[in-house]
Image (cartoon, rainbow, N blue to C red; front, side, top):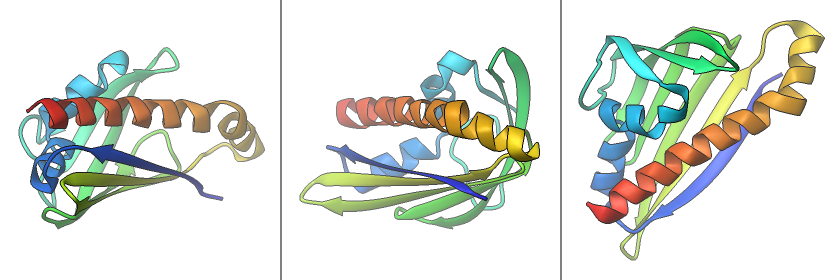
Length: 151
């Protein structure tokens, strides 16, 4: 069973600025500094493009983990999606949508994942992981908003 996290963030910046910030590897590193996330293979700096495969390394729950994703779809400046190829989740995909209304960009995240380890994984997800991932994404979006509104 997939877990889905939907987040909507309003940013007072042009859609193109927000789109580029969201797919910028260097900004991603800054927005995930609490987990010391960094790109270790594939595109390790600059803007992600369709077909890029990136392995991220971070520390979650006290454990160093690697997550390899592919940018599977990209429609500038409205949408891009990445999908896990290898990592701790059973499966994971993240859709990033952007629309602009009256000078405000609305950034919408749809983050879906499935946990391994059967019932134990489901219990861990319900009581710990979903909240953890929501906070992680909210902090990332807070940084993207701050960068977008001050550039």
